[in-house]
Image (cartoon, rainbow, N blue to C red; front, side, top):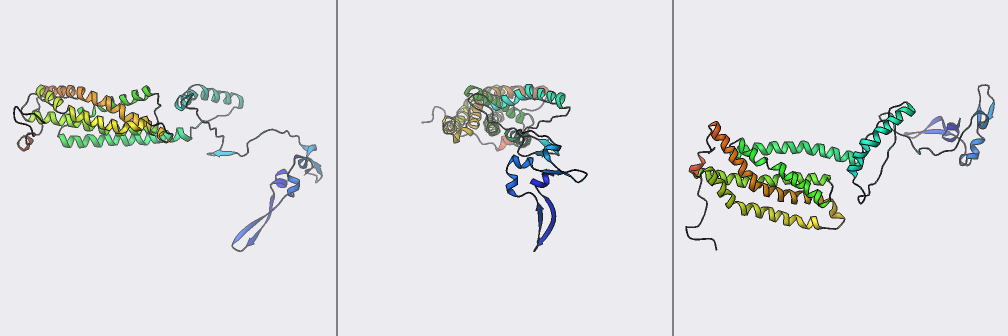
Length: 324
């Protein structure tokens, strides 16, 4: 009765050209504006007698939901909040809620109402998880493609591993850089980690390729590694220095628009500084261990022997002369 009086009942449908119009019957607008009108509603009983609503029902006034939302045919309530970045970090709050608050809430709801309450994380949390999942799959595919290309280039399965073993150390440096600057890991931080992988691999390729070049010239393993470290220190160092110098203005920017890009710049800068330092130390060590394994298993150290005939000597200066 109340629904019919306030919302209306469909009594017929009228055809207006190509459209069909519903004809609804309900109380006039003036009788639907106040709670006093609700007390005057008449309810017809089974005997056909009309009684005031106050005789057949009691009601109370309280705050209710303005609308009822459902998800998968179940009633759902959306709770949103903004995080004060000066006081807390969203990931820490979410992790604390998942550990302490949510389990207690589910248990209390089950005990009080005898029903099961389900919690789904949406908004920024859901978007971040979806982006990280897709990025993780793409990152693995990129690493596999990188390994295949390096295998074709060096005609070896071991040397690509030497080059790619430096990647985790650069990622650790990026995370430590965030901790040093007091930044939280965001989606743009992971974008920077993906870009960092390619730059670190490039520096490692330069060093490993020069070691191979010295070995094909007939140098011993130790002499080739030492020569590569001396001759390729400056190119590797300058590559890192110019990249860091180009990203430094973003890291030092104080404007609101640049705050989103600062985590990405931090990943690249600190990852490069850490990765470059370890490249100059660990790549020679890994290469020496790799050569010892080759000797132990009886494999030749020069993988591409035909390249020795086609390899041109590196341009240099006559004995006694130095670059001016």
